[in-house]
Image (cartoon, rainbow, N blue to C red):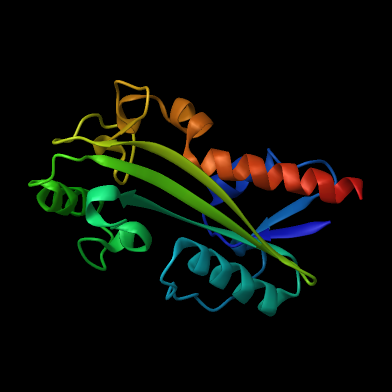
Length: 194
């Protein structure tokens, strides 16, 4: 069965392709030709993931899934959340986003936060969402250079290092995206058995 991942990132497509159960053929957006860009206008991670998956499904008629991720900080009432990539402006600059977060957190002693990913699957008959969450804390300074986004500021619960201080393979095995992906793959395994 064919399944589209609403991403042009070949690395992410290859990574997910390796995890899918046998019987599924995964295509990325680069495999399906010209497609209009999807504006992420949703106010939640779920809304954006569903918007991307629904748009590609409507365009191709093939089952499609999409993901959206964000950092949700307790003291900032869940911000930056859905705006994580554009927190400091539309240019999506990781360093500026991190600096803005540190500035916004300067007066807060409560540093709790979570990384969250939502994967949305849209098929001809249904829609499903799968969530992965990693809880942790925001540091007062950047640490590490192996990650991206807010990784140098985020220490997961039970860790003494940031996501940016460990190899990418270690982070990817326990990340919010990995947790959501496990639920998604488990669902596909059940679909296959019906």
